[in-house]
Image (tube, rainbow, N blue to C red; front, side, top):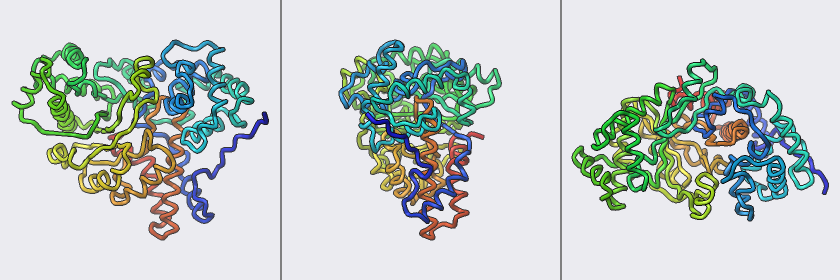
Length: 470
């Protein structure tokens, strides 16, 4: 089989029309080398705190990347081949898994996953041939040699990727010892935890009561009452903030919110602790608990991020065998305007409240989310992510949210466990925003200096403002 060159064009993602492309190229160059701010990722903090070396190409690039795995699964390949649901792979197993990936590289044609992966191959590993059955072993050996270099350990990559801020995702019971170790050390790069209380806000889950008991024990609060549960949540939020947290993260089946009286909340909570709630009542209590997190955000200043409407673990057998986060989560539709009105009516104009609204239902961008962000000073548009962090979806996002302007968006979110994909994803966003702004310039809707200022703000200023990264 003929080896074909890997072509990563310097003008990729820019408009095809020559004069617009020239403007986009100039704008992009003005931000190409700015530091990366990653306010939402899933990189394990111990990788940075302990500078844990990577082991092999499959563990580095395939095992943690559910974007890549889901298409391999759709093509008939068992996820265990790639290290899911089992311990570390042997060298032979890792090489075989990487070979399967390269043999099936054609399934990624036209996908954002191919874009990110090829940027990594070229820019990080120096690979110059396209993945295929014929090139798999050579590419594997090239990446393995890179992994074996001391310059490829996580801390060195934080420097070479120029990641100035990296937010991890952490459960309320986490001790955050790795974040504390980095703080005690005075580590120059900022690695911050994110408070993710989803399961503690879902009284319908079988494990909810046990989680609440653990929350009470850890916080020292009496969680037999709703007031005590709320105090326990405030205690853990404070613990996170003391260790650098700037935001909280929430993902539920919908965006529903509700404000209950203290008596109503106590009654529902007591029944939940006694396992007496119906599914409908569980939803009411969950919506009240989410709204209470917004009230807490007004007090402690942690930015609230909401990313609803995912049918998680859609395939039961895959979940039972491999657990969560293997690519089996599927988006569903969501309503925002009515759902968020109780919370925003109560807290939407509070000077200390910030909420970032993400979605995988892009029909809501122009109809609901942009108008909400265009009125409420607390509301920001979360840029496309997960199933929408692709070139065409990002283009549609910019065009469909023009009513809110550029100041009301969050800055790019990479939302990844695949560490080496972070610079590729952020670079993609910078190129696409440069392309969009270039179109506005050639259409005489913006002057070029305004476009340059806006692009700089999207990369360097908006995420710091939205996530209080002073």
